[in-house]
Length: 373
Ligand SMILES: O=P(O)(O)OC[C@H]1O[C@@H](O)[C@H](O)[C@@H](O)[C@@H]1O
Image (cartoon, rainbow, N blue to C red; front, top):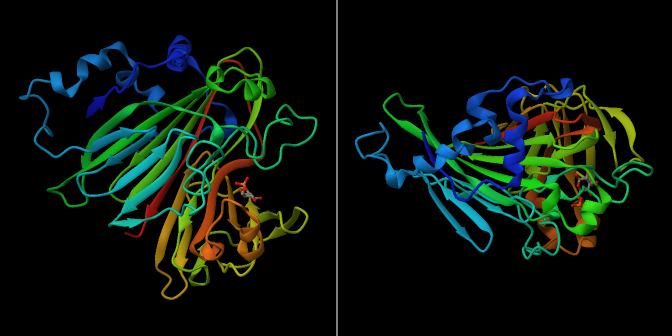
């Protein structure tokens, strides 16, 4: 294991340390922690302890560490954009604005769709990649604690801080090889919000968002902590724009017999009849009560080969969204117009009801996307 502390942990982490490990995870997300998949940085005593500074690799005796001679992941930080690459070539890019993952490359190919007209200057949420939806999904309901927030909340349009990177060596698929992974952690807390957002949602919270790149997966996991005295409700969604060659050539599998709310049909409830959903028109559906470990698969219509396979932890809803022709034209930051053919959003979340966190409680959930390449 190697750890690099890139900046001093801020108030967010200091407060988390105060409440320590005694927090309970609420029932709604009572997931077992799988250290290899969704181990969050706040649960990592090394990364956030004062001792992390003494573990800087440059001070490490060269004789220590079995992986010392292996090529290590690389990290670059420039203009509030963090990019990490594995020695095997895979890379991930995250903008601190929204902690939005804006690129994931495997096999030399981009796996995420980002609109050519996306605003990358922090003036609007980024149209593409993986914007993070929190604490409300869609237009906020009236007479609710979120009602004066913008659509999809504030996480995707706030400036996050980079908490640091950690990397680990795991046994590879071939017994004589070692796979490296790199995990990037980002934090957002109440005090970091704009005055406007702080007034609209006055709760003391701490978010830690972890983006983990492995040789064949991208994993994103969010931990939400209530660091104040008042309960709060939230929804969360990882609004993943997957890049595809042609919308007519894909099918979405794993949804059959599931109930969904169709937002294009006045939010009416339906049951999915198709084992392999073709997208042939504007599609905006919230599939509910999905078993997180059962993958949602985006497969090729030609040969049924899996292009993407998405499993989740603690996230039982999945939104399937494609704006199609007219909606795409109507979005100023979507382009070119025809690009709706090159994307499908498969969004893992918890959006059907609300997660409630009492003082001192924490919740976590995440997704793991496996790409064909
Ligand atoms: O334009 P926004 O705010 O990024 O939202 C895009 C889409 O996000 C999806 O998650 C919603 O289900 C859609 O209703 C919405 O249109």
